[in-house]
Amino acid sequence: MSELRREPVSQRWVVVTGQPWETLLDLLKKVKGGDQEPCPFCPGHEAETPPEIFALREPGTPANREGWMVRVVPNKFPFLRIEGELERTAEGIYDRVSGIGAHEIVIETPAHEADWGTMETHQLEGILQAYRERILDLRKDHRFRSIVVARNHGPHLATLTHPHSHLLALTVIPKRIEEELRGLLLYHDRKERCAYCDTIRQELESNERVIQATQRFLAFVPFAARYPLETWIIPKAHAHDFGLIGDPDLKELAGLVRDFMGRIRKLLPEPTSSLVLHTSPLQRYTEPRYHWHIEIRVRLPVAEGFEWGTGFFVNPLSPEEAARLLKEVAP
Ligand SMILES: [Zn+2]
Ligand SMILES: [Zn+2]
Ligand SMILES: [Zn+2]
Image (cartoon, rainbow, N blue to C red; front, side, top):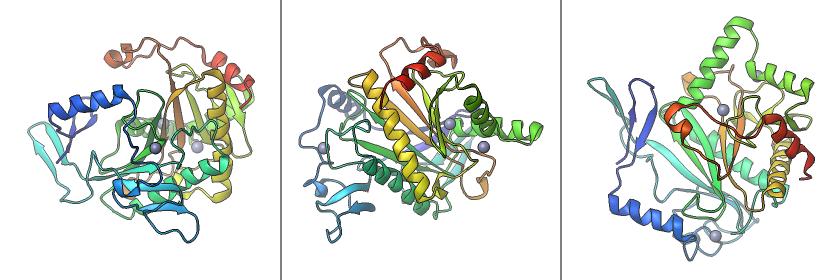
């Protein structure tokens, strides 16, 4: 069974899944060798995944058969498991937590080759809806303190190329969210305002880094973007919890995300991107002063590795230029 370990100085949590070296070598071959044949996420192969937890399907079609539009299943090879005793133990200066959690896979579309940049907005809406439904269901388990959605898409990034996202429910709060929270609370203590709401106001006013704004959402390149073409999508009105998003907002968000991914595809023929959804922690850690958002990173084959050692990023493209490029290309 996996476990979570906390680095005592930086306070970073690490999931140690403890796989044998041979398994890691096999995995490496799979990533390099491209697609697994046949693909377990394609329609007709429903029996090859664990039974579905949630699905949007054509009316009248039975579970775990064809006819779905979006399908959520437990990961067959989870980092964390839902069953078992949640144990938090100390070992001298070290913190250890048993590998309890949920690790689900959102199979985003029946179409193996689909891409968010060419997909129907309606399909993307279904994916975001699946995120929301699973977040609302998983939070009923009071052991979970945060839920994170992450997706990697593009060549050589995943063992399966069929479009999918990972949904992780955690018994701890990830460092990145904790860092954002700390910054937001400090800012709030000083100014009694939300730093992200202020950012949105300023970005809309200066219009230097705005890619697209809809009635309720803003897509912009952050002032200090870490990566070329890094983009944030954020609700304009303060909202801490993605789980509470309403249907009209979900639809509008889907349109904006679809447009953004379409722009990326126009700039790069075969884009590789990573996306993460950051939303407020849960239970007694719920923080109304948090402001949920989506962060998207386009992976370019530029030199990396500096930030690994330093936490100090080198971005070769100016955020203003990135925003101009993204704004000018039609989605
Ligand atoms: Zn497939
Ligand atoms: Zn806010
Ligand atoms: Zn964030």
